[in-house]
Amino acid sequence: MYIIKVKGVAKIPDYVQLRDDAFTLLAYFRVDRPDKSLDKIGLGDKSEYIMQMVKELPFGKIKKLEL
Image (cartoon, rainbow, N blue to C red; front, side, top):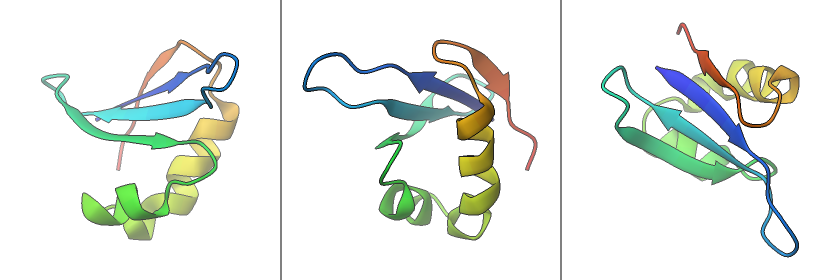
């Protein structure tokens, strides 16, 4: 699974994308509201770990996420 943090502009907030190994979009959520999206794809119990990765990840970079 891959994680990408996208910088928002003007009224558009910052977003996070979670993609599988085939780079198919699994989740797309605002940095400040991850709960429902992560629960929906079955990663609600890993949200703390994922959000820590989001905080450390620079905008526009892709990082492999090992769960």
